[in-house]
Image (cartoon, rainbow, N blue to C red; front, side, top):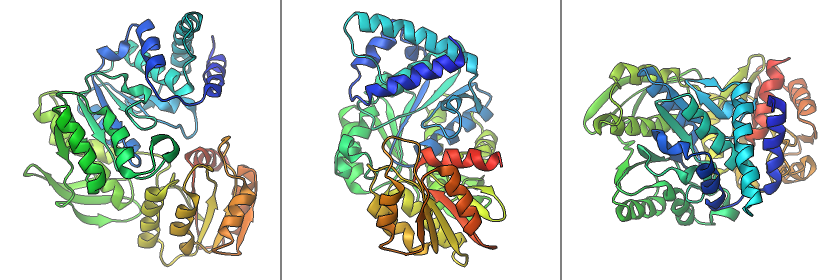
Length: 432
C-alpha cells in the first residue's frame, strides 16, 4: 500500500461516522498488540485550547532532550500533521506502513463480526503504532471528542491527564449543559493518577473534582491569579506567574491572546507535576523557557500575510469567538476589519455571530469543505441581521480572492469559523 492508497483507505472509513464507545478501539488495539500500553502518555481533553496545551507540553519535553510524539486533530494543511515527532510531521512511509498493519487487523475484525472502526479510531491506532515503532520517550495525545468514550481513552495509565477550558460544543453528542460536557471530558481521569485542570466555572469544576475524588486522583487546578502580563502585542507576550510558590519570571510565548497565557500556565502545571512526581527527570527552568518560546500552534490568531494584514483563527464556538473578539478589541480597535467566514451547521452559529459581528465592517461568507457545512447563502441570511455589507461566495478560493479585492489599505482581514476552512486558506495564501 502506498501513501495515496493509505489516505484513501483512511478517508473511506469516514462513512462509518462517529461512534461513542471503546469496543472497536479495544479490539483493534488488542490485535495490534496494545502498543499504547508501552508508551508514556500525557492525555489532554477540553473544548478550547487543548491543542495549544498539547503543543506547549510537547515542546518543553522536546527541549528537555526527549523524543516526543504529538497527536492532534484536525489537520490544517496535510494529513501528516496529525501525528508528529519532535515537531516534524511523520513521513508518507509511516502512514503507508501503519495503515497496512491496521487494515490487516480490521479485515480480521470484520470477519469476526465486529463493526468497522471509524476514521478517528484508525488514526488513533496509527499514532500509537508509529510512536511505539519510533520509541518515543513521551506521547502527548489530544482527545478527539469528549473524553470518556473517545478512542484515545484506551490509555490505561497516563502520566498525567489535563483538561482544558470547557464550554458548550458538540452538544448533540456530549450533552447540552456544561456539567454534562464536563462529565464526558472527566472520563479521562484515571484511578490513582493526577489531573491538571484549566481554572473554570464551578459547574465544570465541581463535576471534575467529584470524578477525581472517586478515582483517588490528585486534582491540580491551574492558578491564574498569579499571572502578571508585562508585555503583549501581536508578536508575543511576556508574563510572570507562580506554581506552588515557585516564581517564573519573564516567560515569553509567541501565541497571541490572554487565553494563550492561561493555556501556557495550564501546560506548565502539568510539566510541574511531571517534574515533582519524578515521572520526567530532566526538565530544567531553561528548557521550560525555551520550550514555551518555541511553541507554535498554526491557525490560532496567526498572521499569515501583510498588506493587507491577514489573520486566520479557528474560532467556531462561543468561547473561541470570545477569545478572538478580545484580541480584535485589544489590537485592532482602530482598524477597519473584514471577515471571511465559513462554518459548520452543527455549531452555535447565532452566538458566534452575536459576539463577532459588531466589530466587522464587511463580510464575505463561504463554505468549508465538509459535509456538515452551512451553505453560504444560509449564513449570509443570518448575517444580514447585523449588516447589509455581506456577500456569499461558495468556493473558498473565490471567496479569498474576493476578500483580498475588497480589503482596502489599512484594513485587517480575519478568516475564521472553521479549522477545515482556515487550513485551506493558509495553503492558498502560501501558494499565491
